[in-house]
Length: 225
Image (cartoon, rainbow, N blue to C red; front, side, top):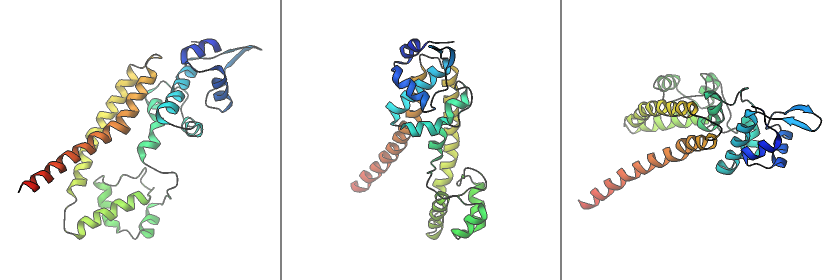
């Protein structure tokens, strides 16, 4: 559907000056120029503006952050993939400042035992972003496992993390698909709110509070003895 600028402003509740700024910065595609003083916008403009507004107001993202996220978006912002794509960098937990190593470089640089590395890869305790891309994060986990082994304790909790993480990730994928299946121009911002707050706030809250509750009860029980 095509919109005039006045209609775009009404649909998004974003001022004309801000929309023109987004276009200038490359956050929005150029409109179709019908004639000298008439430009047409479409549904992609509406969705992108709502998305940018959400990212700025709810997540605190800067224009540069959003520009980086949108740089690799696909042509349609309506698909399941494109709704999820902007989350991927955050979900990976990768910092842009981390140095990356090929497998052989990683083994040599951090003095890693290759058999242990392969074992943790097979157990999915190590999950590099691709099979030949390792960072300090993977080295830290290997060091942790070595500490378990040093004191003679099985790292069973890490193995259980893997099992439950797989179940939870599948539920999260289903949630994402369910949200995309009901997406409309009216609920776009609400769907992003559900997605972000579930993955980055509520999950952490539930996990950490559950651990706190169990350990706190354990401490109370110990003090009673």
